[in-house]
Length: 174
Ligand code: ADP
Ligand code: MG
Image (cartoon, rainbow, N blue to C red; front, side, top):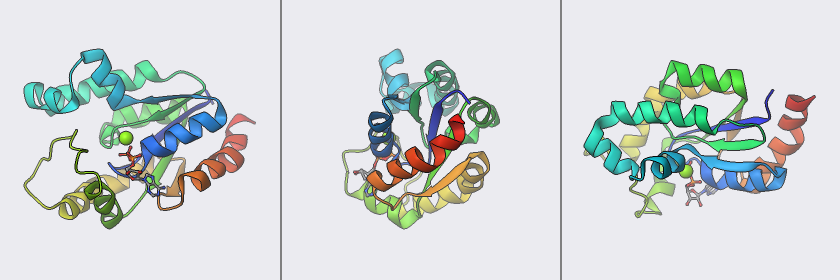
């Protein structure tokens, strides 16, 4: 494979936290697709969605995914990246996909601890646990289907990093 690690999972799963640590540990470059979209468009994700709609955001997201996919990179993706068949196929064909799996309760608990984390506008007026339950109901199957490896997101970032480095990566490279 191309030595590209794609990290997928819902908001709050730890994609950024784990991705940065992992990249550092492997001497890979860390890239976050949401961050890349914000930099290249010079707009926040919230403004893109509010002004141009979700469809345009999803379009930019697919473009960003392909632009950032270069070897020796750990790519942390937006929570909804797996909604597109094209994105799922792209990740499967170009790298190794790691799903950080967490329950709605855990995700909500983490998100509530960082109220400043309001980058992604809420689609509904529901509570954060209800929202995460709905998100997982719609996406869990796609995360699992797309992933080469599913990792419990409640493990410490250090443990997850060690697992990827010592167990997953040697198999990918050999
Ligand atoms: P994502 O990028 O998937 O949205 P983040 O990396 O931003 O998730 O993490 C969301 C929150 O959860 C942060 O406050 C982070 O410190 C915490 N967190 C991330 N990974 C873990 C973990 N493995 N165990 C406990 N807390 C974590
Ligand atoms: Mg993130």
